[in-house]
Amino acid sequence: MPDSPKSTLPYAGIRVIEFTHMVMGPTCGMLLADLGAEVIKVEPVGGDTTRQLLGSGSGFFPMFNRNKKSIVLDLKTPEGIAAARKLIASADIVSENFKSGVMKKLGLDYASLKASHPRLIYVSHKGFLPGPYDNRPALDEVVQMMGGLAYMTGRAGDPLRAGTSVNDIMGGMFGAIGAMAALARREQTGEGSEVQASLFENNVFLVGQHMLQSAVTGRSVNPMPARVSAWAIYDVFTVRDNAQIFLAVVSDKQWAIFCQAFDLTHLASDPRLVTNNDRVTARSWLMPILREFLADYPAQELARIFEAAGLPFAPITKPEELFNDPHLLQTGGLAPIRLGDGKESLVPLLPFTLDGSRLGLRMQPPLAGEHSSELLREAGYSDAEIADLISKSITQGA
Image 1: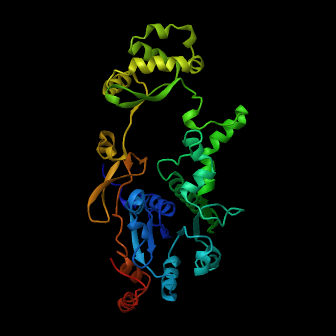
Image 2: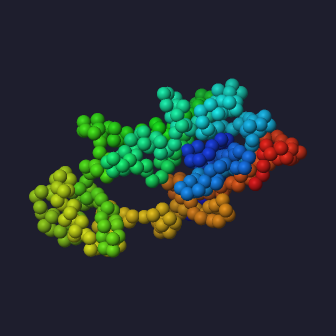
Image 3: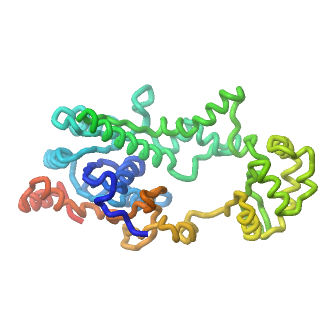
């Protein structure tokens, strides 16, 4: 499926200067970049340290820094700060996720910039919104633990973080949504705004359904592995050759279809299993019967039967297996991307379409300083001045 031409993208013509690293801030910039904005990533000399992360962090940079330009600036020097200010003078949005107080110390905080740039939109990505916690260091895992998500994910007595950077990614998404709202308001008022997004408040938003569950039921909420399910059949089944598959039957109509598909007439006619709530109440004896009945089926056969019957099911898939997912490949959900070592892979695109097209890659994740000279030249620096900045290690090329 072809990439959307830049001129048709909704944020074409918007310039974003981002002082970000890791996941939360770069996610905000990636969303705006995918939607057409020119996003300029300001990196320290030597490049963003996120580029060198190992293990579970090794995918951060290529995933969240596509469609961006890179300039290297040493913000510990007056010359680096001056260059950053020249870039900001041309910007619609500044995005940052440094520790509280860092941007103020550099003179690049919203209060320092607002007077000379009244139309500027300034997005800060933090651990906590202003309040008693706002000076605490925060990580995705920290807020998952203190915000109820790890409790809900793990088994009782065994809190467990979610299997991806949910708060970093969603926090960046809300930062981008805030920027979009501020752009819309600027159209009305002519004035910029300060936007703040945070990990902790994002996590609380995610767990809000369980807060309200407690309010509605008047009971303490059980972790998901120990929850009272809203549906009787909504579980992972171990089947032939120890394969696993998730199967779900979530309505009375689906129960009838399920029983017919497997010729379970005795269960279909059982008066104790007429309604969904009846079946939820009967889980203690119904589930062992179904587990034993389905145990000798191959997982692929169960998938075939459930798909033919229109019943919900899912294979248990590892992340690396998604590279070969036929739906993603056929619908253009994955795009070729360049990794830091020069190898190529595939990367998931934003999970929506505009007029039937996915928002694709216009630019590969940049090399550190790949666009330094180009951007400094646009900002009014001569080639001799750029060469001088390079010689002093205030900037660098790719």
